[in-house]
Amino acid sequence: MLSRVQTVVRVARMLGRTPTTLAPYAAPPVARGFDRVIAAAVDAGFALALLISAALIFGVAVQGGSWVPWFRLGAGVVLLVEGLLLARDWRGARRQIVERSFRRSQRRRGGGSVRLSRLVLWRLAAPLLGLLGLAWVCAGAVAAALGLSRLL
Image 1 (spheres, helix red, strand yellow):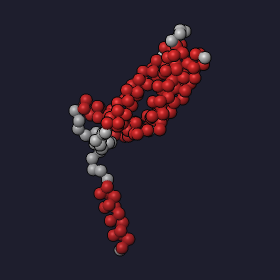
Image 2 (cartoon, one colour):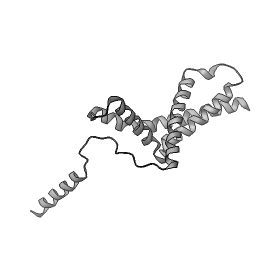
Image 3 (cartoon, rainbow, N blue to C red):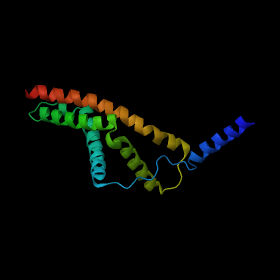
Image 4 (cartoon, rainbow, N blue to C red):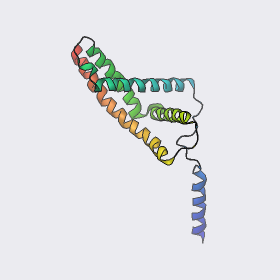
């Protein structure tokens, strides 16, 4: 009899801690000045790293020219830094990107509840950004090494 009561109490405590709404992220805490600067840098760096990735994939830096080694070196450094931010999740960089993207998509849709399938996709976004960060670290190291070797 006592074990059943303990089980019921444990289940009640667990249900008390379980959120009742399907919200992927809680409301953001009040950000301090340095955290706002980091969030802006992470967003700008993410967009820049996406543009650099597209440029490298489509072969912008394949042509010959004096600017190509400098572009590769700069692109490699940007990809390396942004990749480390995402792979290491320094100061919650992945969470910040996913939260801001989620909030933007909610505003475009007019708010409201989130379907379970979309909730699962948003929950998978942070680990996938970690993998993208790891890929950017590797690509950035290769691009920077190629650019540096052409400069020396």
